[in-house]
Image (cartoon, rainbow, N blue to C red; front, side, top):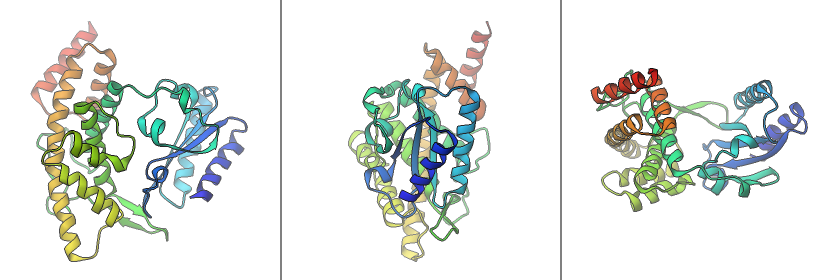
Length: 304
């Protein structure tokens, strides 16, 4: 971990001398809950604003190359101080760990709960649509990614092991359910989730209901006990299959809530909300007559 961070920061200091302001680690490694197969979430911040589009593109390209070359799963982002001044997510503001430079988060605003809700709802819908190769348009109710597979297709994502090999995992299952739960907490309870380890606890406390046990099982079993990997023990495999079987009902419950949210955005007075809703539907259309009618009405109104 330390070698990875030293190398990542060193590469940027060499390629962009004097431009790096600070670097943070967030996610599970920031709060001490990381496991052997956890990815490393890193945010590197340039001083002030990117000098021009060329610098921005070069920095992001270098970041992508670092991800490809990393010996562990690396989820890295390069941004600038100007961008952060528009609002930062709760994981960054409240839970990230400083690893290089001078901590300036006290001067950065937390993204509004309205913006956070919008971002999490739309991105969670995108995961339902795209993570597991489902056909477009999305049709409610969705089916399992692969109804005939042992784990219903939720184990397609691989993780990189310490020796360099790849193994099937539940990483995307955990991402989908965890972020959708985060979105629902923001929408229904107007609360932020800053740490992954808090999501299932807050969901039970603030929302509860039939899916709270699923959130608990995914965190304690899929992430904690099995560390994203597929267990070999037959009893544990049956337990994982049961978790995957229950995931579909949660996905469809989220889709129902998302449909209501989406209609509100398409018909609402917030221009940014309308714009984002149209962009999402362009990339991941939803086969719903009422949504389609609202989308067309908005497009006609904006053409006028």
